Amino acid sequence: MTPREIEIAIIGGGPAGLSAGLYAARALRSTVLFEGGVLGGQIATTDAVENYPGFPDGINGLDLALAMQRQSERFGMETVYAAVTSLQRTEDGRFAVGTEGGGDFIARSVIYTAGAEYNKLGIPGERELTGKGVSYCATCDAAFFAGQEAVVVGGGDAAVEEALFTTRYASKVTLVHRRDELRAQKVLQARAFAEPKMAFAWNTVVDEIIGTEQVAAVTLRDVHTGETRRFDTNAAFIFIGQTPNSSLLAGFNVPLDAGGHAIVNAWMETPVPGLFIAGDVRSEAARQVVSSAGDGATAAIRADQYLTHLDG
Ligand code: NAP
Image 1 (cartoon, rainbow, N blue to C red):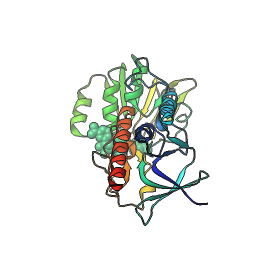
Image 2: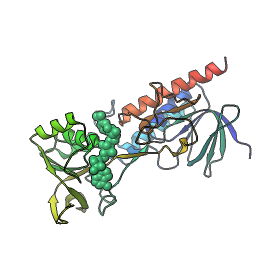
Image 3: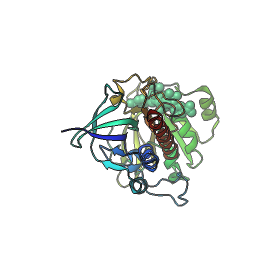
Image 4: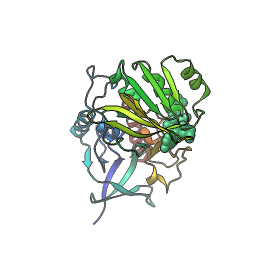
Protein backbone atom coordinates (compact mmCIF):
# COMPACT_ATOMS: atom_id res chain seq x y z
CA MET A 1 0.00 0.00 0.00
CA THR A 2 1.25 3.51 -0.75
CA PRO A 3 2.33 5.28 2.43
CA ARG A 4 0.14 8.15 3.51
CA GLU A 5 1.80 11.56 3.25
CA ILE A 6 1.51 13.89 6.22
CA GLU A 7 3.33 16.96 7.43
CA ILE A 8 4.08 16.20 11.08
CA ALA A 9 4.31 12.78 12.73
CA ILE A 10 4.33 12.74 16.51
CA ILE A 11 5.63 9.55 18.05
CA GLY A 12 4.32 9.07 21.58
CA GLY A 13 1.08 10.17 23.22
CA GLY A 14 2.24 11.52 26.57
CA PRO A 15 1.94 15.19 27.57
CA ALA A 16 4.82 16.21 25.25
CA GLY A 17 3.25 14.52 22.22
CA LEU A 18 -0.28 15.69 22.96
CA SER A 19 0.85 19.26 23.44
CA ALA A 20 2.96 19.10 20.26
CA GLY A 21 -0.19 17.87 18.49
CA LEU A 22 -2.17 20.86 19.69
CA TYR A 23 0.40 23.34 18.42
CA ALA A 24 1.02 21.49 15.16
CA ALA A 25 -2.69 21.17 14.40
CA ARG A 26 -3.34 24.81 15.27
CA ALA A 27 -0.57 25.71 12.81
CA LEU A 28 -2.80 23.92 10.27
CA ARG A 29 -0.25 21.18 9.62
CA SER A 30 -1.60 17.72 8.83
CA THR A 31 -0.64 16.01 12.07
CA VAL A 32 -0.80 12.40 13.16
CA LEU A 33 0.08 11.26 16.68
CA PHE A 34 1.08 7.62 17.13
CA GLU A 35 0.52 5.84 20.42
CA GLY A 36 1.31 2.16 20.83
CA GLY A 37 0.31 1.80 24.47
CA VAL A 38 -1.99 3.81 26.68
CA LEU A 39 -2.54 7.45 25.89
CA GLY A 40 -0.93 9.73 28.48
CA GLY A 41 2.28 7.77 29.02
CA GLN A 42 3.40 7.87 32.63
CA ILE A 43 0.46 10.03 33.76
CA ALA A 44 -2.02 7.40 32.55
CA THR A 45 -1.32 5.52 35.76
CA THR A 46 -1.25 8.59 38.00
CA ASP A 47 -4.36 8.85 40.09
CA ALA A 48 -4.14 12.54 40.87
CA VAL A 49 -1.96 15.10 39.11
CA GLU A 50 -1.77 17.99 41.56
CA ASN A 51 1.03 20.01 40.03
CA TYR A 52 -0.31 20.80 36.56
CA PRO A 53 -1.34 24.45 36.59
CA GLY A 54 -5.00 25.20 36.08
CA PHE A 55 -6.39 22.33 38.13
CA PRO A 56 -6.47 23.62 41.72
CA ASP A 57 -8.15 20.44 42.96
CA GLY A 58 -5.93 18.11 40.94
CA ILE A 59 -7.00 15.93 38.05
CA ASN A 60 -6.81 12.23 37.27
CA GLY A 61 -3.85 11.56 34.97
CA LEU A 62 -5.79 9.66 32.32
CA ASP A 63 -8.55 12.28 32.36
CA LEU A 64 -5.93 14.98 31.79
CA ALA A 65 -4.44 13.04 28.86
CA LEU A 66 -7.87 12.47 27.31
CA ALA A 67 -8.71 16.17 27.70
CA MET A 68 -5.43 17.09 26.02
CA GLN A 69 -6.22 14.69 23.19
CA ARG A 70 -9.74 16.11 22.75
CA GLN A 71 -8.31 19.61 22.59
CA SER A 72 -5.70 18.66 19.99
CA GLU A 73 -8.19 16.67 17.91
CA ARG A 74 -10.59 19.63 17.92
CA PHE A 75 -7.98 21.42 15.81
CA GLY A 76 -7.39 18.49 13.49
CA MET A 77 -4.79 16.25 15.09
CA GLU A 78 -5.41 12.59 14.33
CA THR A 79 -4.53 9.77 16.71
CA VAL A 80 -3.36 6.44 15.32
CA TYR A 81 -3.29 3.74 18.00
CA ALA A 82 -0.37 1.73 16.73
CA ALA A 83 3.22 1.23 17.82
CA VAL A 84 5.79 2.82 15.54
CA THR A 85 8.19 0.04 14.62
CA SER A 86 10.50 1.81 12.19
CA LEU A 87 11.65 5.34 11.53
CA GLN A 88 13.91 6.11 8.59
CA ARG A 89 15.04 9.12 6.64
CA THR A 90 13.99 9.07 3.00
CA GLU A 91 16.28 10.17 0.19
CA ASP A 92 14.35 13.41 -0.21
CA GLY A 93 14.80 14.34 3.46
CA ARG A 94 11.44 13.19 4.75
CA PHE A 95 10.74 10.41 7.27
CA ALA A 96 9.28 6.97 6.65
CA VAL A 97 7.21 5.95 9.66
CA GLY A 98 6.29 2.27 9.84
CA THR A 99 3.72 1.03 12.34
CA GLU A 100 2.40 -2.24 13.62
CA GLY A 101 -1.09 -2.47 12.16
CA GLY A 102 -1.60 1.27 11.68
CA GLY A 103 -0.25 1.63 8.16
CA ASP A 104 2.83 3.35 6.75
CA PHE A 105 3.38 7.08 6.58
CA ILE A 106 5.76 9.58 5.03
CA ALA A 107 6.14 12.66 7.20
CA ARG A 108 7.94 15.88 6.37
CA SER A 109 8.85 16.33 10.02
CA VAL A 110 8.90 14.13 13.14
CA ILE A 111 8.45 15.11 16.76
CA TYR A 112 9.73 12.22 18.80
CA THR A 113 8.14 12.08 22.27
CA ALA A 114 8.44 8.42 23.15
CA GLY A 115 9.17 9.07 26.84
CA ALA A 116 11.06 6.93 29.30
CA GLU A 117 10.31 4.05 31.57
CA TYR A 118 11.25 4.16 35.24
CA ASN A 119 13.46 1.23 36.07
CA LYS A 120 11.67 -1.27 38.25
CA LEU A 121 13.03 -3.34 41.10
CA GLY A 122 11.13 -6.34 39.80
CA ILE A 123 10.21 -7.57 43.28
CA PRO A 124 6.96 -9.03 44.64
CA GLY A 125 4.35 -6.38 45.44
CA GLU A 126 5.92 -3.65 43.29
CA ARG A 127 3.54 -3.88 40.35
CA GLU A 128 0.47 -4.73 42.42
CA LEU A 129 0.93 -1.75 44.74
CA THR A 130 1.92 0.84 42.14
CA GLY A 131 -0.38 3.81 42.72
CA LYS A 132 -1.18 2.41 46.18
CA GLY A 133 1.94 3.61 47.91
CA VAL A 134 4.52 2.49 45.36
CA SER A 135 5.48 5.45 43.21
CA TYR A 136 8.18 6.56 40.81
CA CYS A 137 7.50 10.29 41.33
CA ALA A 138 7.70 11.77 44.81
CA THR A 139 7.22 15.27 43.41
CA CYS A 140 3.83 14.01 42.24
CA ASP A 141 2.82 11.77 45.14
CA ALA A 142 4.63 12.77 48.37
CA ALA A 143 1.76 15.05 49.40
CA PHE A 144 -0.48 11.99 49.80
CA PHE A 145 1.70 10.82 52.68
CA ALA A 146 1.53 13.83 54.98
CA GLY A 147 2.51 12.83 58.50
CA GLN A 148 3.27 9.24 57.40
CA GLU A 149 6.45 7.23 56.88
CA ALA A 150 8.11 6.72 53.53
CA VAL A 151 10.94 4.67 52.12
CA VAL A 152 12.96 5.90 49.15
CA VAL A 153 15.03 3.38 47.19
CA GLY A 154 18.20 4.45 45.35
CA GLY A 155 21.29 6.54 45.92
CA GLY A 156 21.49 8.83 42.89
CA ASP A 157 20.46 12.46 42.41
CA ALA A 158 16.84 11.55 41.81
CA ALA A 159 16.55 9.43 44.96
CA VAL A 160 18.14 12.03 47.21
CA GLU A 161 16.34 14.99 45.67
CA GLU A 162 12.98 13.26 45.86
CA ALA A 163 13.66 11.98 49.39
CA LEU A 164 14.34 15.57 50.46
CA PHE A 165 11.13 16.67 48.76
CA THR A 166 9.24 13.92 50.58
CA THR A 167 10.46 15.20 53.99
CA ARG A 168 8.23 18.24 53.44
CA TYR A 169 5.23 15.99 53.97
CA ALA A 170 6.26 12.71 55.56
CA SER A 171 7.06 12.33 59.26
CA LYS A 172 10.16 10.29 58.39
CA VAL A 173 11.92 9.25 55.19
CA THR A 174 14.27 6.28 55.13
CA LEU A 175 16.58 6.12 52.15
CA VAL A 176 17.46 2.53 51.29
CA HIS A 177 20.68 2.17 49.33
CA ARG A 178 22.49 -0.96 48.22
CA ARG A 179 25.94 0.46 49.03
CA ASP A 180 27.39 2.50 51.92
CA GLU A 181 27.97 5.59 49.80
CA LEU A 182 25.59 7.74 47.79
CA ARG A 183 26.08 8.38 44.09
CA ALA A 184 24.25 11.73 44.33
CA GLN A 185 25.98 15.10 44.06
CA LYS A 186 27.77 16.13 47.26
CA VAL A 187 25.56 19.19 47.73
CA LEU A 188 22.46 16.98 47.77
CA GLN A 189 24.17 14.52 50.10
CA ALA A 190 25.02 17.31 52.54
CA ARG A 191 21.41 18.46 52.54
CA ALA A 192 20.15 14.94 53.11
CA PHE A 193 22.56 14.28 55.99
CA ALA A 194 21.54 17.55 57.62
CA GLU A 195 17.80 16.85 57.35
CA PRO A 196 16.46 15.61 60.72
CA LYS A 197 13.59 13.69 59.09
CA MET A 198 15.97 11.59 56.97
CA ALA A 199 17.28 8.17 57.98
CA PHE A 200 19.53 5.83 55.99
CA ALA A 201 19.55 2.08 55.56
CA TRP A 202 22.99 1.36 54.09
CA ASN A 203 24.05 -1.79 52.24
CA THR A 204 20.40 -2.69 52.09
CA VAL A 205 17.99 -3.72 49.36
CA VAL A 206 14.22 -4.15 49.28
CA ASP A 207 13.16 -7.74 48.61
CA GLU A 208 9.39 -7.33 48.79
CA ILE A 209 6.70 -4.70 49.17
CA ILE A 210 3.91 -5.80 51.47
CA GLY A 211 0.30 -4.61 51.52
CA THR A 212 -3.16 -5.28 50.16
CA GLU A 213 -5.03 -2.03 49.54
CA GLN A 214 -2.01 0.14 50.42
CA VAL A 215 1.67 -0.35 51.15
CA ALA A 216 2.06 -1.48 54.77
CA ALA A 217 5.72 -2.53 54.94
CA VAL A 218 8.78 -3.57 52.98
CA THR A 219 11.16 -6.43 53.54
CA LEU A 220 14.72 -5.15 53.81
CA ARG A 221 17.80 -7.32 53.34
CA ASP A 222 21.33 -6.52 54.47
CA VAL A 223 23.47 -7.32 51.44
CA HIS A 224 26.45 -8.37 53.59
CA THR A 225 24.81 -10.54 56.24
CA GLY A 226 21.77 -11.62 54.17
CA GLU A 227 19.61 -10.86 57.20
CA THR A 228 16.05 -9.74 56.40
CA ARG A 229 13.63 -7.66 58.45
CA ARG A 230 10.17 -6.18 58.08
CA PHE A 231 10.13 -2.39 57.96
CA ASP A 232 6.75 -0.69 58.34
CA THR A 233 6.13 2.16 55.89
CA ASN A 234 3.22 3.78 54.08
CA ALA A 235 5.03 4.56 50.85
CA ALA A 236 7.87 3.21 48.74
CA PHE A 237 9.33 5.69 46.25
CA ILE A 238 11.66 4.01 43.78
CA PHE A 239 14.42 5.92 41.96
CA ILE A 240 16.86 3.47 40.46
CA GLY A 241 17.30 5.24 37.12
CA GLN A 242 15.27 5.52 33.95
CA THR A 243 15.48 3.93 30.57
CA PRO A 244 14.55 6.30 27.75
CA ASN A 245 12.61 4.90 24.80
CA SER A 246 15.23 6.05 22.32
CA SER A 247 15.68 2.83 20.32
CA LEU A 248 14.02 4.20 17.17
CA LEU A 249 16.67 6.92 17.03
CA ALA A 250 19.48 4.40 16.56
CA GLY A 251 19.79 5.02 12.83
CA PHE A 252 20.06 8.78 13.20
CA ASN A 253 22.97 10.98 14.02
CA VAL A 254 21.45 12.11 17.31
CA PRO A 255 23.84 12.40 20.28
CA LEU A 256 22.77 10.58 23.43
CA ASP A 257 23.88 11.19 27.03
CA ALA A 258 25.31 8.41 29.20
CA GLY A 259 21.80 7.29 30.13
CA GLY A 260 20.62 7.07 26.50
CA HIS A 261 18.57 10.31 26.50
CA ALA A 262 18.73 12.38 23.31
CA ILE A 263 20.66 15.63 23.53
CA VAL A 264 18.75 18.46 21.83
CA ASN A 265 19.00 22.23 21.87
CA ALA A 266 16.55 24.62 23.50
CA TRP A 267 14.28 24.37 20.43
CA MET A 268 14.19 20.56 20.76
CA GLU A 269 16.19 20.38 17.52
CA THR A 270 18.53 17.52 16.61
CA PRO A 271 21.33 17.56 14.04
CA VAL A 272 18.82 15.89 11.67
CA PRO A 273 16.77 18.60 9.90
CA GLY A 274 13.09 18.08 10.61
CA LEU A 275 13.59 15.71 13.57
CA PHE A 276 12.66 17.13 16.96
CA ILE A 277 12.81 15.35 20.30
CA ALA A 278 10.85 16.43 23.35
CA GLY A 279 9.81 15.30 26.82
CA ASP A 280 11.32 12.61 29.05
CA VAL A 281 13.25 10.97 26.22
CA ARG A 282 15.48 14.02 25.97
CA SER A 283 18.44 14.78 28.18
CA GLU A 284 18.07 17.29 31.03
CA ALA A 285 14.28 17.11 31.06
CA ALA A 286 12.61 18.23 34.28
CA ARG A 287 10.31 15.19 33.95
CA GLN A 288 7.11 16.99 34.85
CA VAL A 289 3.82 17.10 32.94
CA VAL A 290 4.04 20.86 32.64
CA SER A 291 7.62 20.88 31.36
CA SER A 292 6.93 18.04 28.91
CA ALA A 293 3.92 19.92 27.58
CA GLY A 294 6.16 22.96 27.19
CA ASP A 295 8.74 20.88 25.36
CA GLY A 296 6.09 19.58 22.97
CA ALA A 297 4.81 23.07 22.23
CA THR A 298 8.36 24.31 21.58
CA ALA A 299 9.08 21.41 19.23
CA ALA A 300 5.86 21.94 17.26
CA ILE A 301 6.44 25.67 16.90
CA ARG A 302 9.92 24.91 15.56
CA ALA A 303 8.66 22.14 13.27
CA ASP A 304 6.14 24.55 11.78
CA GLN A 305 8.90 27.13 11.23
CA TYR A 306 11.05 24.42 9.64
CA LEU A 307 8.29 23.49 7.17
CA THR A 308 7.57 27.13 6.40
CA HIS A 309 11.26 27.65 5.69
CA LEU A 310 11.35 24.58 3.40
CA ASP A 311 8.41 25.94 1.43
CA GLY A 312 10.35 29.20 0.97
P1 NAP B 1 21.26 7.13 38.64
O1 NAP B 1 22.19 8.29 38.81
O2 NAP B 1 21.57 6.10 37.62
O3 NAP B 1 21.17 6.44 40.07
C1 NAP B 1 20.45 5.28 40.24
C2 NAP B 1 20.62 4.83 41.68
O4 NAP B 1 19.84 3.65 41.87
C3 NAP B 1 22.06 4.48 42.04
O5 NAP B 1 22.37 4.93 43.33
C4 NAP B 1 22.08 2.95 41.97
O6 NAP B 1 22.95 2.36 42.90
C5 NAP B 1 20.66 2.61 42.36
N1 NAP B 1 20.20 1.36 41.74
C6 NAP B 1 20.22 1.05 40.43
N2 NAP B 1 19.66 -0.17 40.24
C7 NAP B 1 19.30 -0.62 41.46
C8 NAP B 1 18.68 -1.80 41.93
N3 NAP B 1 18.30 -2.76 41.08
N4 NAP B 1 18.47 -1.94 43.24
C9 NAP B 1 18.84 -0.97 44.11
N5 NAP B 1 19.41 0.18 43.74
C10 NAP B 1 19.65 0.35 42.43
O7 NAP B 1 19.76 7.59 38.32
P2 NAP B 1 18.96 8.92 38.70
O8 NAP B 1 19.18 9.28 40.12
O9 NAP B 1 17.57 8.71 38.21
O10 NAP B 1 19.63 10.03 37.80
C11 NAP B 1 19.66 9.86 36.39
C12 NAP B 1 20.37 11.05 35.76
O11 NAP B 1 19.60 12.23 35.98
C13 NAP B 1 21.74 11.29 36.39
O12 NAP B 1 22.61 11.73 35.40
C14 NAP B 1 21.46 12.39 37.39
O13 NAP B 1 22.61 13.19 37.65
C15 NAP B 1 20.36 13.18 36.67
N6 NAP B 1 19.55 13.89 37.65
C16 NAP B 1 19.97 15.10 38.06
C17 NAP B 1 19.27 15.79 38.99
C18 NAP B 1 19.78 17.14 39.41
O14 NAP B 1 20.82 17.54 38.94
N7 NAP B 1 19.11 17.86 40.28
C19 NAP B 1 18.11 15.27 39.55
C20 NAP B 1 17.69 14.00 39.13
C21 NAP B 1 18.44 13.31 38.19
P3 NAP B 1 24.55 2.47 42.73
O15 NAP B 1 24.91 3.85 43.16
O16 NAP B 1 25.04 1.41 43.65
O17 NAP B 1 24.83 2.17 41.29
